[in-house]
Image 1 (cartoon, rainbow, N blue to C red):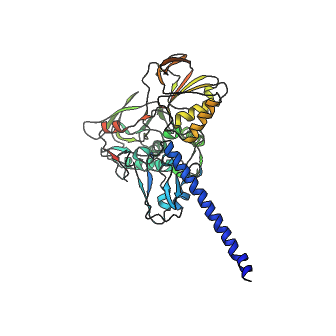
Image 2: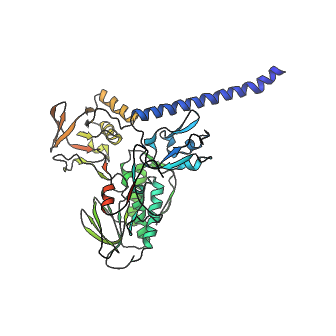
Image 3: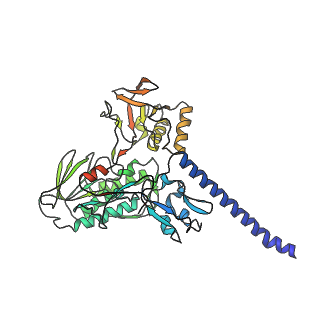
Length: 438
């Protein structure tokens, strides 16, 4: 009888417990591997808002890991020795869902780390900066999540409407700088409110979103857009989201001045407005809303010929390079993703040039793709090289002590961006560098 009881109850229990321990060990091993890969790739600094987990409070329930919307596509949080850890910091984009899910309040959301500070402009609850009349919404203020940026753009435009002097005088009510999620929502909000406004964007619709890798999944929570109502996307691709926004732009006849960059913002003598100077014009206005993101202006190489039309600072469509000689410059994920995407197009000849000896800032998966393509002879990699001159049908590169002349019909420069901190300070906005603080 005792043996039968053991067989019916104890043995299945032990089997289930053993399966649980094995699954838990496998997940922990996967977390350790992800953490080691992040360290090896020097991807240990989170780009924006991120969690700090108190191991003394953490009870190891996995609620934060399961709540992270990014977890399906790549690791962010994991469990190591029974405690939650930020195992892939560079993958964290600041959803904040982990903090909400933690039942014991073991998570704080902060900007920057002890080693790397993050510049955050001073912004009041109504999104107005220390300069009365200048507002900031979206990624520039530290909130990179699309839904949050849309909501901030909508709310900030409500604050602009409440300003004294809106609707008066021969000027615009507001100049909106940037057409990313926050700027797009703010523009629709201004249109809905009947404000006199102009929206300028140095690049294209979508802002930072337009620079995401091809096929990247975005939008994990619904958001409300002025005029349109609720966007019911829960998970979609970058391309479909941009197509949706383009449809709204056309349907509402929203006018956005693309390829126009702001160069200065100067307060008027009476302190009740601004003159916004751009690469095309000057706009008098009552208020300014900055939704320019944190990417800033693309960093240039500063070499002869860089002004040519064949030079681009991001990849839009790999198919446009089919059958061409293409040079990609850079060593981060955007450069490697551009290089291997173009190399997969028929008839292309792709060269990847990077000034350092190793791709230390790129994810392991991208480094592996580049290595496989190079070994297969479909991609040429020139480490410790520098572009010296760009010509009509060729490019000159310094490599291994010699000058190389390569045939060329297209160049993509992925050298990062010049952060807008200097611009913000130049127009009087206070900026605080945060080292692991809220």
